[in-house]
Image 1: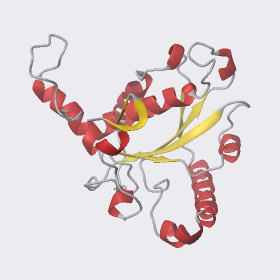
Image 2: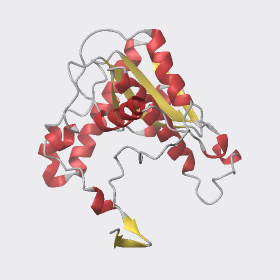
Image 3: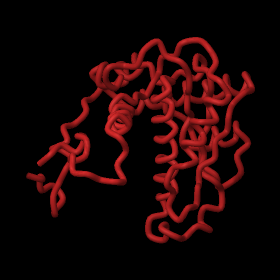
Length: 228
């Protein structure tokens, strides 16, 4: 079977982009990284606006657009968010048992060193949206994750690093950010310049885990039945 990450079959397709643009899309996907190490310097407001527009162009179930982006500009609030992330880092280490020491040696965030911090949340009153969510209400989270991925890929294409931090207590972060009851913070995004992008996912470079082969995650007709 042809690998899924190869360019499309060369048969004429009037809907396809020119080959250099196709290559650029696959390159951004392949080289996107969860960044923890940032270089000094601001990013332009126009640039940030482009990333947010890319996010807002993401797909959403029932067109509910459940994502909200909160830009953190108050230094004291950024410090408070960092403190919450660091506290959860310790709690996570305690929950990891024998791998706690290994985890504590990892750099897991860049809240204080990145150019921009954004908190991404799901809106309140999400139960009002039934289309596509009647049996799977978590599709609001899936939709917001697609928006974040769009943001990530747009930033990578422009040479800007993004790190998705999920080490926080949602209730505490919601209170810090003044979010309404029923809303849910799902990510702290660290955004900024980098000296270079990691050649592979940082956790893979650090030996925490490895990226599985495509054959390990692709089944056919029945769960667990490998595709030929």
